[in-house]
Amino acid sequence: MSVLRPGDEEIHYSDNSHRWIGPDPDQDDVWRARVEAHVEEHRRTVSDGPPPGQSRRSGARETHR
Image (tube, rainbow, N blue to C red):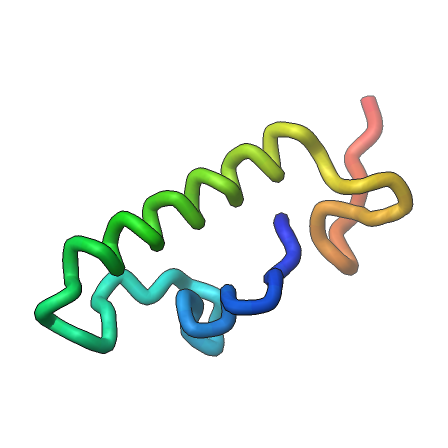
């Protein structure tokens, strides 16, 4: 899980899902490109792992083998 950065709030709904429909229909292509880049950043953050001292999900149980 990644951390919301300043300015990311408008890209997410209150349940943290992504807002794919932008506020201005005339700028829909620009909005969609912004959200796609943002989602890609989430993917990079998850694949890199959480920053030191931070878990992926708060309250998540670790599974050890």
